[in-house]
Image (tube, rainbow, N blue to C red; front, side, top):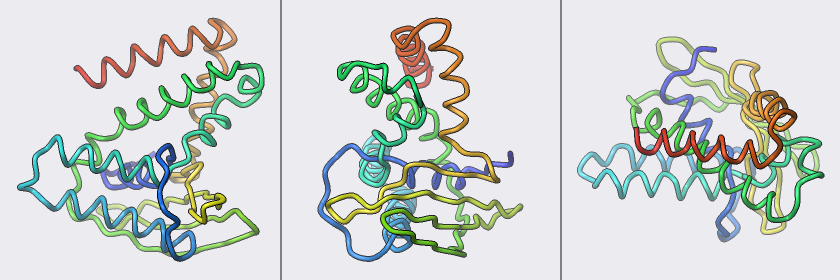
Length: 198
């Protein structure tokens, strides 16, 4: 899978949700585009303190991505078996892991362009298709759903036909089978610590 730094920007900016925000105007493509533009705006502010820029990017990601929905899909049948506390812990760890995994790639943005090539809406769900224009064009599709506040939140990102959620689901299923959900959470903690403090 060919992933430029900017494809990872979009993979992040268009896949999370944890903080409440006011309802945004427009449809899924418009709201998604707005989030991406905000991230790019921060990336272009070279004089901005690095920690403030990183926090700003994280805030945008948390507002646009539905991490609960992503977590539920990543755990699949194990979500139903998890307690309320375990679910909360998993959502928190999953969000932190995604952010820690890709924030460095996001910050490596080098003026790639995003073309929005399609938008399909069916009820409260939508699919927005984009192409990252770089040395090699990279197709990225975003699955979104509409929440009660009127916000379109990303719950999966498909890069060159590879689903982000499905990839995690495959690896997590094997870990939970062998080590249980608590074992998976411990592994996620280790990975987050390694990424945040290399």
